[in-house]
Every structure is written in C-alpha cells, then in structure tokens.
Image 1 (spheres, rainbow, N blue to C red):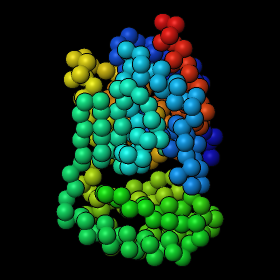
Image 2: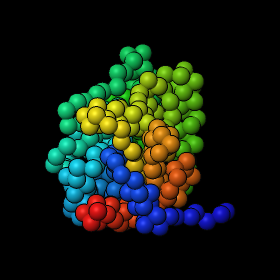
Image 3: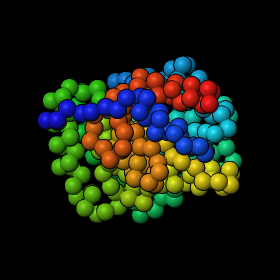
Length: 268
Ligand SMILES: [Mg+2]
C-alpha cells in the first residue's frame, strides 16, 4: 500500500491566503477540530482552538461555519463561539446563520422505515458490548467506536444483512462513517447542500463572491468537498481516501493551520 502523503501546514495556509478577497472557512467538528473520544459526549473544543476560530470570526475577511453530523443544538453548545458564526447540524439538515436559518424537509413516507431501522439496530447493539444506537430526526446511527475490532466486524456484517431489504425500498440511504453506520432518510440534505446554502447566504450578505475553504475527516465531508467549486480549498484530515486537494494528518495539524491563518491575516 502506498503511504498517505500529507501536505505541510504552510502549503495549505498559502493556498488559503494567496489571493485577496473574502473567505468562507467551513469545518467539520469530530475528528477535524477535535480528537475522537470513545464516548462522543466527551469530545470538547480546546480553549486554544476556540480562540483561533474566534480570531477568524472577528476578522472582516473571514466568515466561519461548523458543519457536523451532530444535532444543531449539540454542535452549537460545544463550539460556543460569539459573533456571526454559521452552524450546520445533522450532516447539513439543520442550518443556522447570523440572520437566517433552514431545515431540510423530511418526507413522511420515510418515517416508518427510520423507525423500523431503529428497532433492528437496537437488536444488533444489544448483542455487542460497547455498541449503541442514536436516533436523530432524519437518521438512525449504530455507533461502534467502543467495541472490539472483532465485535465491530461482526456488527457491521450483521448490519448489512439486516438492513439490505430496508435499503432496497430506497426511502433510506446508507452513510458509513468512522466507526459508525448511519441510515438517513433518502430526502435528507448532505454537507454539500449545507455548503451551498451557507455560501449563498454569505454572498447575499456581503454582496460579493467568496472563496471556500473546507476541512473534514469523514466520508460525509466528501459531499462538501464536491460542492466547493474550482477555486475552493478542500482539506481532508487523516488517511481516509478522499477527493480533497490537500491533506493534513490530524486535529493538531488543523490547529496549526488555524494559527497560521490568524498570523497571516494579522500581519497582512
Ligand atoms: Mg468528522
């Protein structure tokens, strides 16, 4: 296997700041801004990283947004930035900006399938130590981070066996993530939809076009990378295969990048 090649933080910082003009920096949360924890409840944004984001939020050239799979209220309380910040929760299904908000509509026909999926995943989780199921408005997620590798493989294989007929009805879609398997209502928005919505809102507010920067570690972030446009700066975090143009190894490298951006704009 070819080893994964990471870019230098300086290279990515240059790609972000080399041109004049307004920038919209959007970032995923878990695995990108913050290290994963076995218990997702324990994931917290460090004060140093919050301060770096706050410096970008305050700078007239930047708009900043957090795009996460977590519910909107959860992500807002964990990031807790003052000022004009965008938040997108549930993979883009709930979006809130400084002046506007949007919620993806859900097709009622998908609800019984989501309920049935929840029942089936509960049965799988009950048989696997460390597994648990999370139900959100438009999705049901099987969490496997706290299981042994062997149990995870068994649970994944059972998940695919037990949900095949549900997926064949085409009212749900499968979204695999890092140690999670998620079934979403087929009509639900993606992080790419959130990127497009936020960009439009910012450009309307600023009455000018903006260049996008997006950082993410997860499979779900690929939708966002694809929505950036040709002048966007896409940054994958971690070794997962990705369509992003740049790649950084981990959340500390993301912190380093944010620090470089803050330095660049304060010395410019
Ligand atoms: Mg993530």
